Each structure stands twice: as structure tokens, then as C-alpha cells.
Image (cartoon, rainbow, N blue to C red):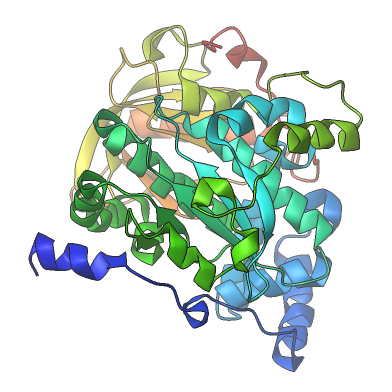
Amino acid sequence: MSVLSDLKRLTKDRIDVDMLHSEPDMGDTDRAAIAELKVYMGEHYPEVLLDADHIGPGGDFKLTRFLRSEQHDIPNTARRLVELVQFRREYNVGAIRISHVADSIARHKVHIYGKTKAGQIALSYKVSHMAYDGLSTLLCMLYFLETIDTVFADSFQLMLPIIDVSEMHVGLFESHITHKAANGDVLHRMYPRRMINTIIINPSDMFKAVVTIARNTLAAAHGSHQLNGAIILDRASNKILADLFEPANVPVELGGPHSMDFDAAVQECYAREGIKPGTTASAPIAPHIRLLHRGMARTADKMPAVRRGPIRVLSLRTGEWRACFAVLTAGAFFYFTSADCTIPNNSIPIQWVVATPLSHLAEPHSMKVTTARRDYCFAFDTAEDRDGWLEAVGAELNKDGVGRSRSSTTTSQDPTLHDTLDN
């Protein structure tokens, strides 16, 4: 299929409300699966409690959303819940406040402005012309999703993101789209069946061309199909949003008559949370997460570490082994493109990992690191080197007891990273 014909297929000139996903009420199949899931979790993951302190608000409604996202597969859902608990601890999701995200909200004019005719809550987001800050944007979206999860804990209320890309700078397309694909995948995994088809408005021809060419590559790279699921509206067709909203409720930012006092909405958040207006602060996320997004002041080979050195990692996308530089700290296992890099390719928290020797035809001295979401394969030049890494990872896992952080809902802190962070 040509790029021109694909562009025509990608861009919509109207929206039918029936195109949007809706969520049925909880049924007998869901209730039976919930009961089975709770038994399975108690047997296989007794340290993961299915309460609000661990999985967040929602109770059985949240469990149902996770079960439905995995077609009621109990083992897969259980692993997803373990991943959720780990994610909430690392990003301290329940502690994100308006003071942590106010700057990002202002930059992107993020606000919830009402429901569609079909009942979905619409959230408007405008892509800034500035360089994309993946961490700030992710925290901002977590703030709004957690708010919706809390307010509508006992329901299957859906949210419809509407993204205005009119100010997206051509030179930043790659970073914007790549980070958005990754962040979109994270949000859909942590809040399954809460967000529905993303609507993109005001796209330039360049934007549509870049998305058309890049979306399949990004989906393969990130395991995400969020770009494929987006509804991209024609640049001059904001009026078609009236298909979704009562005409009087479409905001000015989206081409309608409704004018929203954005500053007043932010101040209302400050008042509701009892925080002095204008206060800003850094979100209390785990240091290794901040390092993963923002980098550090020193290179990987100068980073405080339990163990460090060159290794090879198996790419899931290409099936090839790539040389990299690994660093094990008291809280996480990082790997970088090279020893002189300051931003890691990935960060694997030590809690809940299982590290085992691996026999691989191409790389005989290998190690498999298993997390709740996936397996990582690393290779070494000698069996002695591999065994040294296995021993180091095992020692960190068993420090102060195997379950030292598994049942805690507070963010795991690695003191060796604080002096390493760039900001």
C-alpha cells in the first residue's frame, strides 16, 4: 500500500460514536475469574496484597479490567498485577500531587472538560513545541488517570484522550512519537480498559506522513499498537467533534464555543489537595526511574556500583546480541549502549527478579533475568564472569532477607544513586 493511500485511510473526516469502545457491566464470568485470581495470587504471589495500598483504588472493578485485558487468563493477569504493584512503588503513583505536575499541565494545557455523548470522560492535551519530556508527561498523565481511578473506583468509566499536535515541531517528531508510543503502552498496561481510542487533532501533512511511515516500526520496537489505534482527524475538521459532544460543550481549544478557565481549574486542584497555590516540587519517584528518564551527571563506568562491566544483551526485536555496558546497584540492574553513556537503555529493579544460568547455542555463557513482564538474556565472555554476575544479583536479592521490599508500598531507595543523578 502506498504512503498516499495509507494517509487517506489513516485520516478520518468524521467520527461515529459507535467507533469508540464501551465497557460492559461486571458479569458472572468476571466474578468467577476474580475468585480464581485471588486464590492464585495467594498461592503464587502471597507478598502481593490486592488492596488499595498495593494495586490502587478500584477493588474488584480494577481486577476485572486487568482480567478482561488478558482474556481472563489467570496466570497472565497475576503477572500483570505484580508488574502493577512494582510500577506503583517505583513511580509512587498514589503520592503524585498537583505540585509535582503543575508545570507540565500548564505546558500542555491538560484538562478534563466533560463527557462525550456516549459517556466517556474527555481529556485534552496539547503537544508543546518544546522538546519532549517523557517523564514529566508520564507523571502528568498518571496524575489524571489516578484521579479518575479514584473518583470512579467502583465503575468502568472510560477516558477519551484528545491530543492537539498543531504545535509539534518538525524537528522533534521522532522523539515525540517514540516517547508517546512508549508512554502510551505503559499507561494502557497500568490502567487497562480505562483509556480508549486516542483522538489526534490538527495534524500537519508532515505529521501524518511520519506517523504512517513510523507506526509499524514503533509498534515492533515498543510492543505497542497505540499509534495504530489512534483516530487522526483532518486538520480543518475540528467541527466534527460535534459528533462526539453536545456542540455547546466543545471547548475553544478544540474549535467549539465553550471557554474554560484553565488557571481556575489548576487552582481548584491545589485547593482540593490543601497545597499552597503555585507550589512546585519534584515527584517522589525511585532514583533509578529518574536516572532512566533524565540521565546522570557521570558516565556509566564512573557510576557507584556493586558490579559493572561489558556484557551482551539479546534484542527481542531483532534476535541479535548487542554489546552494552551493565551496572548493578543496590536497587537496580542498568545496561547502557557503552561505558561512556549517561542515560541507560533500560533499568531492571532488583525486587522480584529471578536470575538463572542460561545455555544458549550462540552464547554458551548466558544469564536469564526474569521479571513480571518479560525475560532478559545477557551473555558473557566466560562462565566465571557470568557466575560473578549471578552471585552479585543473588546477593542483592538476599540482602536483609529475600522479601525485604516485596510487601512494602513505599518507594525503594538506592542511596548510591542520589549523588549520581543529574537533576
